[in-house]
Length: 491
Figure 1: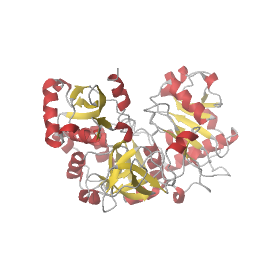
Figure 2: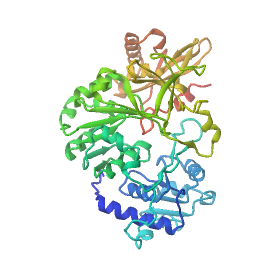
Figure 3: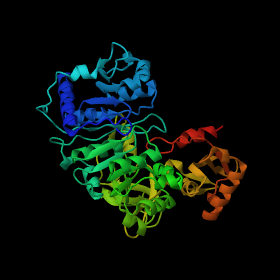
């Protein structure tokens, strides 16, 4: 653990996961059942995930920032029979109405139980064996979407046959693609309840690696950890890069990052200027993958290929991409349309067959809402989310272009661009900026940024208005919560 310094060895992790697996069986949970985990990043998280994954169970990792009502929805929707939590979550746990949690019958907590309805995790597993259970089989993550529009949806994949192993781990090929060696050191700066951090850190542990897990991301602290632990590999999101680049030059220069062999980023498109600056700083060690929680498809691109195809998210590693137009026909290279994948992972939205059917076409290809295009060399480029597209005066505008320009300005920490209602155009392009220094916010900076956009974008793509916010509602998985911003401007 990055801040506390707590260490869990592989032997300790193995023993503790086996003990919990035995408890799961003793409580009557069998292959295909579900447990839930509600904790901050801590040394207990992986124990719960590994116990479920080796017992043929689904494990639902719940966002630790959700309110009691949102948590209750996920617990009921997932049918979780057991919940593992921590003392740090006590206030949230106390707000749960346990009588409404229909399937939940076992409640374990690391630390002091908030009420008699909760059992001490340590006490519950203390008498359990540390050897593997007799009927090990592969479980999987039951991940819930971010829920930026409507209720979050559970994304459920069929369980794989046989025991859990590197051979059936979908993340191991990605680690191998970035040259992760058995026994490497991997920095994980993001909340472990998100899909990629959960999968990737478990794959690192599977390969005998050390995970350095941050309790919370801080740009300078991340650099200090890379230097102190001689980190070889790491995964970031673009907003992490932006915050590193906004540090003063002397702060950045104070830390040795030469141990890095490969870094991978994902979750949101990275502005070309930001990635160029990162490669200039760290060298050509920054790879990228694109996928979704659904696992409908995935692409990968190395730094070397990206320098030849700037802005691309790479070629497919899972599934076959195609670009589809409004009429359902496949578009030629270079034309923008909906991104579909064929041959990706099989999945369903839990308890929502209509939504599951809505993301597939008659050919069985799946689209989860991203827009982009393929070039003549087969490299995929993301343009934006379909739900973020602005239609102004009948013209399609992709806000990501303006966001990429704005965030490259030295006075901008973060930027959100979206459509707001306009009586003549239908929608007009608007921006909300998080400045590096709040004292800069005001009409002068708005005018400076408008002029800056005009130098890099066609006139119709330039925001018609710019407001400021001290902290944009960006989810901690790197995705921008635009719906919250849009609602401010909707009558």
